Length: 231
Image (cartoon, rainbow, N blue to C red; front, side):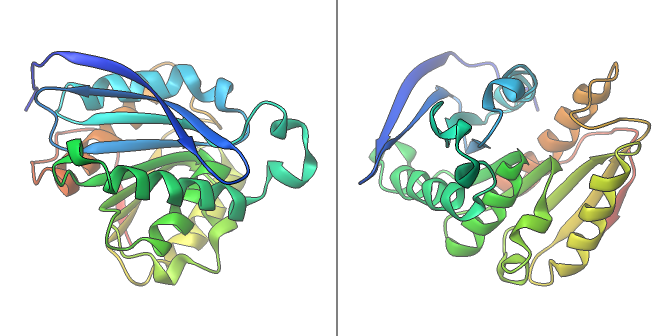
């Protein structure tokens, strides 16, 4: 169901002992849940695609919180680039911040991440099983969360490009490790990494929408042309 509601943008700053997380919250008067976009390295590279996915979620009653888990200076540090533990710790702080916010009104929380952000989302969900209700990885690296996969309880959808062979194989292997939750793998045919092909990111947005509407709002999934392999 498409929801018509007024949307408002709010800058967000979450203070940590050593730094701060910055982000952008967009919520409407008809929002019934929230999806956190977890970005580590390359946050600017993902911004346009994230915006396309967020627009689809907004139309279906979901607020979004775009987070940049690494500051620009940190993105130049080799020790931070693939530090999934660091990214996950900051994402956990953001989840806690949302959970403690009075305006949330008990909204269910979803996480979506690409690349290292997907690994961080899985670790964070394993660490906060009572506060994360659904996860979507798009072209992500769930293998970076290998030690945490069997502790993830939130329903998890892994989306990969059919022509992104290396990442697709990593996701197929990770699917087998998600033993404690409902999980599925969706392959977008002929798509490469980051889904730059015409129509590919739109298909990713539809898949993410269906998963989050189903698991955050209890709605019905829409029709799409991509087969989903259940884990």
